[in-house]
Image 1 (cartoon, rainbow, N blue to C red):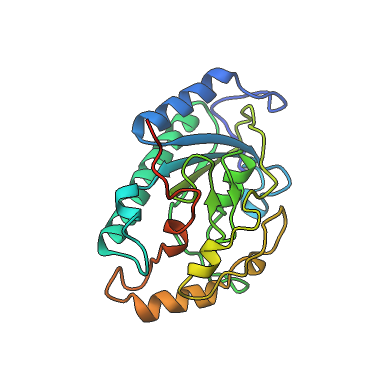
Image 2: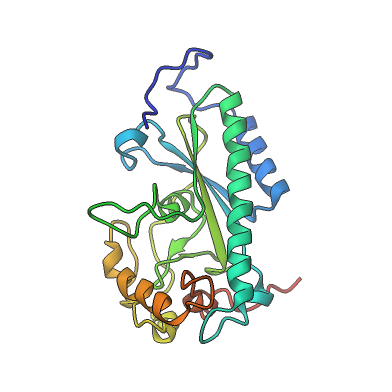
Length: 248
């Protein structure tokens, strides 16, 4: 799919970012539909190929239910699997709405599916574009030792969505340093023994954080009765960053 086709219905000065008004509208729409956090990422030099003109990333985050995640201890639950799918559906609805808003302004926009594996010759466990890359570039959190996005507010108890666009919006400050420190709780609790225990930094290979084949094989072998072995969640629920309910 080629996103480099010249627009014929609106002309903009691409050297300038659009007004903060559209950023506020996109954020407001996301929050109204159920997002917990929203950030804007500068992806210049990161997106490649057919996506290379879509250099702005909008990262949206939906918080997972603590009542459900607290029950995911040694293995996933059927309720968690249902929740996982339901939140993914909500995220896809939010990113679809944002895509429509951006297109109405005369720009290209592409919503990355909340949960989709795009197998390639080099990587059978990848997506069209990495949600976590956009999220850290948008300042929403850092990558934990469990290879998940970790936030100050909710830990890793979140799901992510992404919209890529050629609209230039005021970018948020990226996060480039891990806050996991010496904590290895997720590594110790991983039932697949798939986590390496290394601290994330920008540019670190995924395989230095997690053995995705070991993770996938464990789910397939042990959780066939729960979503046909497609979810686990133990490394998410065990993270102390998200395990304590926020006091209000």
